[in-house]
Image (tube, rainbow, N blue to C red; front, side, top):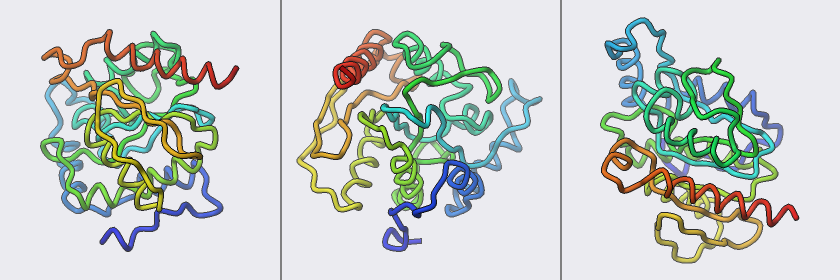
Length: 241
């Protein structure tokens, strides 16, 4: 399926239920379908008793959120196992810890879809909905997923800030805006960066992805990550005043 064949305009009668059902049924990318299902069959020894999700993962969070967090893709034994974004792996531990400390989540942990986690004023999604081999989705696979991101954004009618976690999410979000016809200034990725795009687009915020590689090497510390969410919290509070 080519990018030109993909409709980036949400249907007028779109709902969260309709969108999430379509995401979960999606089989647009044969390579990703094969890989996500293989991972779910083979499993990791530590999770051999789990019934892996093994399907595309929809976004989740507060439907009235003013903050949208955009990640890369489900983790092989995280979201692809649990069925919820950033749930069940080290990236999620870092993300939800920061969200809890800055008031966007009711708890700092995320283990499964029934763990009681709730987000407040935040919604989490990704530019790819299926786990890709070596964590590297192809350009066409990302293009196949963009309509889902477009529809989520359209349903988040109170959106004021979009936080891109990492270069792939950053580039994917900007590509979506350009494909929708928005004229954008030159924007470079910078951890902690903020860009005010032309109205009515939300403010764009940037952070390194909370991957184990980034946190273990010190590229992203907990203090650095918390600072990004504190900055966003300040923006939202100022606009609410």
